[in-house]
Length: 127
Image 1: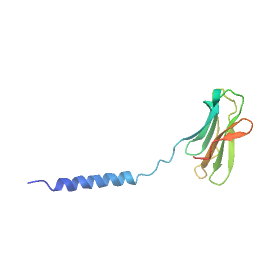
Image 2: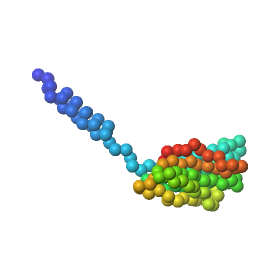
Image 3: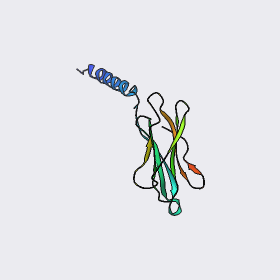
């Protein structure tokens, strides 16, 4: 005689697992990155990058091209405040960063920019 309880038990286990995965909370911290390309021979290389880390509180800027142009990351906070951080040492090793955000007032959007004749930026990215 077939065991009729096994399919019911398997279905119950599947629904319990699906419910756990379906309602799992989103990760509260993740790093985001914006990159600017268009430097070097025929614009094939990355000019620099910037982003947001530390649970949406830290903003950084990294110039990667030794071309004499500046690099910055601009940001906006939840309360409407905004600002920027320039990579202070150009393309030398190391990046510049600031911590303008807090848990109550995190960085919400940012963009990475390189200065040539004018600031050339990525679109605004979600932090």
